[in-house]
Image (cartoon, rainbow, N blue to C red; front, top):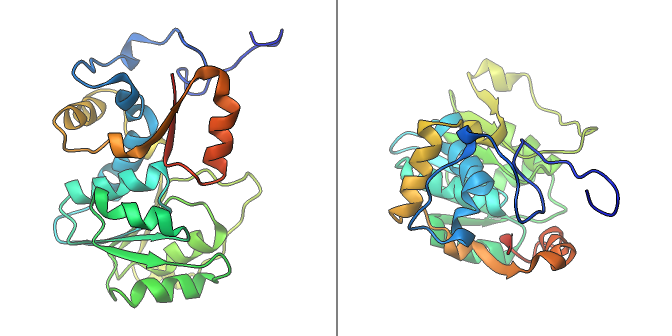
Length: 242
């Protein structure tokens, strides 16, 4: 309880608490990985890398676009890199986020404006590469989601992994399906307990997935409100509580 009221968790594991009871199937050996780094595997890494690997099924030589460079987006970039993507376009409205995208494997940086329409966002991206095989949309901004439906080449895939508001609506052309495009979504990037999760732990341990640069700051637990405010303000990539 907190201040006399029940405290609920998400996915049977997450909570702003120092200890929590979980299922045995949710436990993994993270020895050799600092706790502040291991904490990111549970969502940011599993969702972002999983979006590229499990949902987007990125193949070697493909061109990938990642829209939105928060904690999920930078890991989608890493997933694309691990999948052997030829080009990885990082797209955002924040110059500071674009500046760090290359750390994770982005080959091209595309700046868009909050006032851009969906077709303008798509045009800026296609000016860099006319062929896009996979788009991973992480921002849940309406214009970005609509642009993501326009970008894939014939037979390409659009992956949506953000959580938009319940009343959110987007519009797209029916011709998107005529040309064989696929729209894909899934919680946690399609990462499931078992081998796929253990693989992520092993890749972090081996240094194949960069974690430490994502952690902008570690807050004490009693400053959780400040950490959330920093996240909402786009001032950090990932906030960790300790």
